[in-house]
Length: 253
Image (cartoon, rainbow, N blue to C red; front, side, top):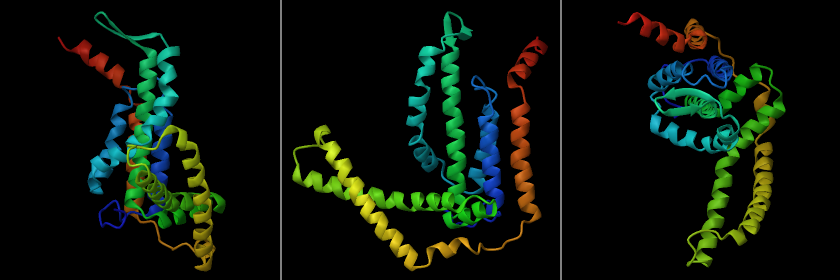
């Protein structure tokens, strides 16, 4: 999807990277109980998704892979934070539930933003933008190698799982008692495959890719995109939806 020709794809990669980082920082700055005030923050990713013609279903599936980590991190809020945040009739909603849902919403917005950046910008172009921001080359190398090797790691795991299934046709999956040796073998095979991949990249002059990033000037359209994304996000950050709803309720007869 990163090679499509849409208004978002044609933007300067450095501008898209800065806009994504700025948006994520603004999202993270919300308080732990700011679930309702965060709702307008969906506006920017939704518009970018529509302009870049990125399928929402695919992004939602990729985003779902990261949410379990947030579930494990925020599940303790439901137990430890037992204050009452809202009462609906006889039903009381705890502050722990609000903080838990806020954490999940923050993770959703952050992951969607990163996925949109990757879906509209090739990885090597993102690396060049990171180099322009003077990010250490070691971090850029780790970023590239991690991204590029994930597919190879999945291929190794799939081949091992297929071999295991052919030897144990009566088993529907990998038995728990074999899981330790399976993961150990996968780790050893990964080390060997990673070493061969890195040597092949060095023979093709891989380090030289970070010495001469492609020069491209920032246009007024790029600046306008950055201002619109960060400006609207800051407005939504300062906007008090709860207070506005209370004022409207008072004005209505």
